Image 1: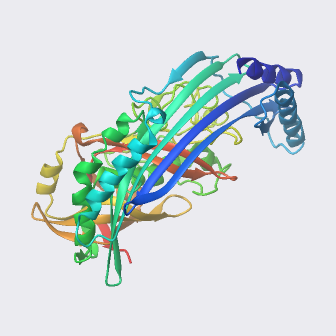
Image 2: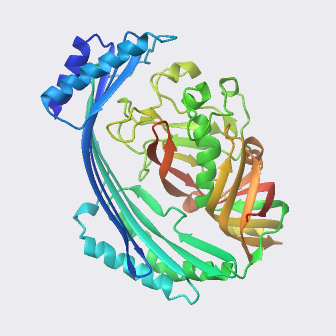
Length: 480
């Protein structure tokens, strides 16, 4: 494989490329689910191929193939050159990459138990136990449980002398309980609405505590059918980390992607309110809000040694005590915001897609509060947990989120269960209303496995860490 990677780079240089790289990707996926005591679905995918990206005559060119013969590698590299030369006829400016040293190395996800060595019968047996635990709850209508695993072996080589081998491994799963009543359907999921996924092996599954929580999750789904609706009006709200995960993703993560800011990418999630004039000037949130990007986070789904441009993993602040200070960047765009090096955020969905600026792991830094103390300190509020739905505008500014469940807080005590809760706001006003964040021991890294971007569409994975946090005087209401 190394010979083929270097061959592609030789062809790129001989064709006149000022820069070239190749990514050779071998992917293995296994997904299994159960539904009401039966196998719900099973999926096993194996895939291999490569993509060559070049800059020639100041423009990008890209080509890919699943034929790993020498002839195919040579032809694909030449096709990338031809594409770049054709594109250069319409260019408005030269494409120039900010410098990055040549890296030669190997990086692998730490793993205790290889999930692809765990027999399918063992995985199904575990899921059926969880499924049975959910269905022991009287009144429960549907029980769904799932596990998923991904291994990606990567080879990256560039005309600048980098040669990197990486092996990424992701594991996880979750469960969902549905209760159906008179004109009403309620759901509870665990550990979050999308399950819980992290980088690592089958030990991630063993730490999910699905069996320990299945009956509680089932009981909450049934209890929601007879719960009161969430009241409407201005309330102090406390969000659990699983909901804050998506809040961070949609209202800070996507807006911080520099390609959206520059308008070179607007598919799926629009552009951004974090324009260049706001860089290091905008007070995005309160002094309690520090949001950190970290491609080195242990267990993070975007954790790797290097990105898809061969840039080493890094950790930096996007928001520092409320002030917006950093972007997610690539080698092409980093200089635009004054950085002297890419933050290493370029990733592609497989071998046949070009890398895009992608969110890495992003988390809200923990504070000093204990959750029970925070509830005791809240006079009139609502504690909302687990995302149910969301919407946000094309600038990532005005939003609405709903959660699966909530509890009313009166005079410092958790009271009645509430159903169909939602809250609305404007990104900067919302983050500015944050006056308390819980401590490190309650900070959980939540994995997202289905972030869409680009055209043709690409899926990426990342993790958002958060502990429960309080936001003052927020509009709340009912989702129908």
